[in-house]
Structures are given as C-alpha cells and as structure tokens.
Image (cartoon, rainbow over all chains, first blue to last red; front, side, top):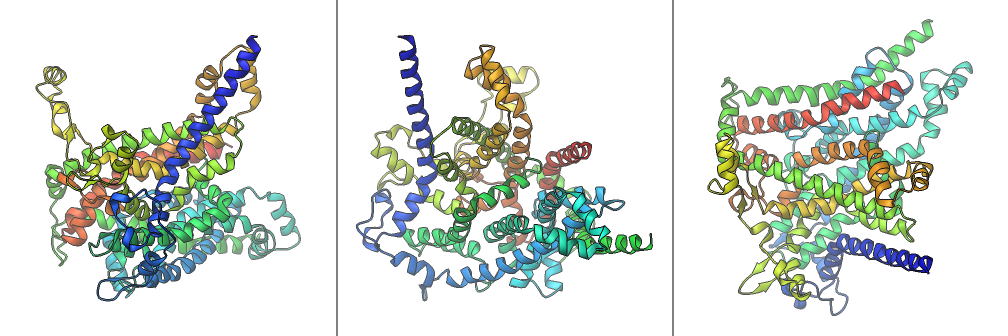
Length: 287
Length: 329
C-alpha cells in the first residue's frame, strides 16, 4: 500500500518538475516569441496594444525595411551589418593567432617572470574599459585610426589578448610534455614543436577561441560607439541602438532589426553550442 | 646549451608584442586616465594643470553620482541574488535525469549569445507599461489578459525610491545608535532598477545554471549514495553534501557576475537611459555621457578610476587566489 502511494508521490513530483522547467523555458523564450511575431506582422496590424497576438499571415516587410531603410527617414542596417562582418572576421582571426602563440610560450616555454606576466595579462580581461577610453581615443586619432574599421579591429585584437591567451595556455598545458620532449629528441626547435606537435592538436582550441571572440566582438557596443562616430562605419550594435532610439522608426521595424543583429551569434550558438560552453567555462578561469 | 639560449630569446620575443601592447594599452592607459582624473581638463582642449583630488571630492558630492552608487549597489545585489538562486534551482532540477535536458539547457543559455543592446531593445518594449488612457502594453498587457492585473506597475518609468524613513520606528532606532545616515534616500533603492535587473537576469542566469550543473556533475554519486544509506533525505543531501561542495563555483559566479554588473553600460543605454530622476542611471553611463558628450574629461576620468578600483577590489584577490591554488597542482 505504502509503496503504491510512494510511487504516486514520485510521479507527481516528476510532473511538477517538468512544469517548473517548462515555465522557465517559457520565460526565456518570451522575448523571442515577441521578436518573431512582431517582425512578421504586416504594417496594418502592428500596435503595441496587440503585442501578444499572432500575425494574420507571414509578412517580411519589416525585415526588408530594417535591412534597406527608408530614404530620407532612417538608415537601414545592411551597411552596418557588413561593417560588423568586416570588423569581426579579421579581428577574430588575428586575435586567435596571437592567443595561440602566447599560450604556447606561456604553457611550454616558461621563462623567468612568466608567472608574473600571466596574471598581469589576465587582469586586462576584467578592467572596465572606461578606464582606457580617453587615452585610447587620442592614440587612435594620432595613428589616423580613429573612426575607422581597422582602428576597431586593432582595439579588439589588443583587448582580446588576455582571454585568448588564457584559453590557449590552459589548452596547451593539457598537452602532455612527453610529446614535446619526443619532438625535441627528433631535433625540432621552438618553431618545429609548435608546427608539428601543438598546432595540429589546436583545432578545438581555435574553435573555442574564435567563437568566443566572434561573439564578444560582434556584440560589443562600448568600443564601437566610442571609436566610430560616423553612421557609415558604425558596427550593427550601434546602428541598432540608433534605430531603436529614433521616433520615426516603427516598432516592428525595431524588432526586425534586433533579430537581424542577433542572428549571426545565435546561429553560432545553435550550431556550435558545445564549443560556446567551453569558452564560457574558460571565462570563469578554473570554473 | 647554446641552442637552448637562442630558443629562450625567441620565446620571449614571441610574447613581447602582446606583453608590450598590454603594458601600454592597459597599464599605461590606466595610468594616463589616473593622471587626467587629477587634472583640470574640462573642455575639448586638454588642460593638464594638476587639481589634486578636487575631481574626486566634487564627484562624490555630486547628487547624480551618489544616486549612481546607490543604483550600482542595488543592481549588483539584486542581480547576483537572482542569478545565483535561479541558476542553482535550474541546475538542481536539471540534474534529476530529465528527458530533453539538452533542449532545456540550450533554451536557458541562449540569451548569453546575444548582445546587451538587443536585450535592451526587446525588454524596453516588453516592460513598456503603456498609458492609462490608451491601455497597457507589453508584460502589463499580458498580466491583464491572464487576469493578473494587480501585478501591473510602471516598471522602469517608476521614479519611486524605497528607503528607511527617518520618522519610522527603525529610522529612529538607527538615529539613536548613530547610524541615522542609513535612514536617508542616499541608502535607498530606485524601484526602476528592478526592470534592468530582470533583463540582465534573463540574459545571464543561464550562465550560473551551466556553472552549477558542471559542478553538480563533478560530485561523485557515491557521496550522495553514502548519505542516502545513512538515511538523509534528498533535501538534507542538497543542504549538507552538495551545497558545501559547490562553494567554489558560487565564488566564481559572484566574481564574474559581480564585475559585469559593476560595469554594466550597454543594457542601460539600449533599455532605459538614465531614467526618471536617474532611477536607472549607473556610473558607466554617467562616465560616457560626461566625457564624450559633455567634454568633462577630468570628471569622466575620475568616474572611470572609481569603477576600476571597485572592480580591482573584487578581481585582484580572486586572480591571486586562482593562480596560487593552480601553482600547487
């Protein structure tokens, strides 16, 4: 008798468990629901007072308008989307390469002072970037890089050094020293060990670092808004903020623009989520 | 021996561009900002005449900055508590052999991949209260539809500041023990900041869930099994076996989330701006506005240094601790 009651109790507990999990899932998905249905509504049915109602059919006018813009009224996001691509791709590649080299040296070629250098590098990952913005702006204008995409690439590469170095150092530290020793006996020098031992093993490390850098550079706003003033060169986060702050831009166009901005990093998350997680864990140092 | 030497030189050469870049762009620039914060630079034209600690004194006396500090404390506390509680709850629930665990996990975590700007734009509309004349919008409208109208409120448009009133019982008690300052608006909380906390929690709580879940998975099942054999209930196991073992994770989460919340900027820009009576203003927002729109460079620099000090107090001991414990292994 009591075991049957016990079983029933357990079953109810399971039902309750799934209800709570589903309720939380609904909370996390709620903004996506609003983004999607609003973006797909026709202009006639867009009203914040009917925010939760499903659209009457599939309309993609809002996406077109957010992408192309409306001459004389507001800029579309297409140009800024491409700016973000031109910024994010080279910055990601360069900082991954730098991180790999730094990580290699710090993991396998420790020198006197490298134990001091490493935490000093790491601290750069946590600083509030407000504390470097004023000299950064002046230095960039001296270098004629202020207000340009190459300038922003430079900034992201420099301030990406700590996190990329950290991830690669921890990754290479896990590679057995025996492998390195064996290559040394075969006559490999510092470059040979990297080329023939570490680099071929680096693929997962590169994926983690590149996803991390891609996401944080694409999503950055503070550097972008400080370094680029001209709408023509602004990355998409700044353009979206301008779009959403403008009173002439309809609500559904803002939502469509937000979805367009989120899309690249969301796709990366959906298809490469496993590697995304590893980057997150590295961000917590020892997790 | 000779070969070893040239390789030593090369290894240092390989890392030196990065080391120099960090030395200049992190430490040099921080030094320069510190220097600006002691100067009289208050317009587009740099003026490096030293003013001592004048900027800091006037900053801490500035009503807006006092509100910002109050908001930072409230935001950080609420944000940390809600992320830790929700993250731990979800992790504990997901750790019970759930069908579709991967799907739930992905749903809880995806906001991490999105820019704070997107989050801000969406939540600004979701929490837009609407007007009395035209009707409710956003979440308030949802409450209306679900018959939960009593939950409606002004969200980030609400200028109310909660604080211990000096005339109240507790206020008078505080005054008697010499802590009367605590019973003033300066130690209150703008309720508008709750909306920003909600959006930030939506974005970051999945991260604490993931951290805790990884922690739970690293606890050997035998430990729990042993407690079960000793007759402990599931709740007792959680309280006395699991939670103590998760403490290092809680520490990591507090450090990571804490430093994000101290420098929160993008979300406020996209979602609310400074808000009514600076209800949702934060130091990072004040810094950008006063520096790059107001050209008060010295004041902006002093805000940046205050931010840096707050974060360093949190981060430096953690860095030292992490590296020390790693060195032992």
